[in-house]
Length: 429
Image (cartoon, rainbow, N blue to C red; front, side, top):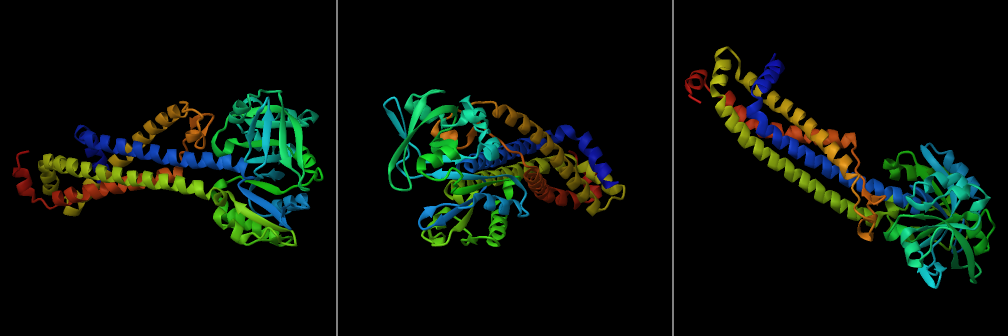
């Protein structure tokens, strides 16, 4: 009976509740946009970082100061036998000495890393790059031999276009300077730290390094659920420990040198999660999340005070109604429950409206280009901000909003429940 009466009163008093509802709508709308922006930024960084850092979890081999996995297929098989839900597992060759350079037409650009990819195994992950021209299609055939994928920023610095022959310079394992001429098969949009990477076939990079064509330095592991990175990395490390020598867990990139002894005599594997690789960047995102959470709390407090004042006036205007309900036998607890249920229903309905408006605004926001400059490239896909609405987060925001409304409404509701029926009926509102 009490919920029915509360809903009925809410509908009858909808004009009086309009201001209170508007405050909740705006508050929940802003909270949803803030959390979606923060989560979207983190997911975008994870997506880009996974391609750059060898998957969501990377397995790297070390022996006698060299980065090498002597039997990459055995490592791939061992990873696949772990209970972790996997999307892609593929061997890689990574070269990241400071002398890696690209040359074309008298111009040169230093690369942060050269990546040799098994396109048959990892091609679908590389295909998610935002290609301005070309793509990975030639690598699916023999036409991909001696081909290369470069970023738009590198192509502009080199003044290179699709189909041009560029020269790659590096140092072989024997310490000799070597070069190779590769054809630009694809140019992808990327800037910032993720833009100075060049992708090519494993065989081609191994050949110029003077290694066997099937050699590998890493195994890239892409997860179906990237949200569970640390547990997944530990499960993979534990599974590999049954067959290979492995280093202790690497929890942060700054701990890598302390944990990993590159000069070990026996080949040993380091298992590193993307969270550890992106630790410094994640600190930046976490700082943004802290600011956004502070703003969320601030919004909640503002909404609470707005509702407190509005509800106090609203209940004052309904004094005679309160007196009538008390005269008809409703207890003080019943009066309080009616008004708190009214407030809760209002909070849920207004939050739902705010959520709907937020989803529309976010959909529009994803179509707006914010450019591809280094300042924003890390957080954007195809030059656009990405927003992520996670329903567990929405549920938490809803509970916080309803809780804030109930806390704000409790004081006026309690005061209203203490009114004496005769005094309330005599009151001229």
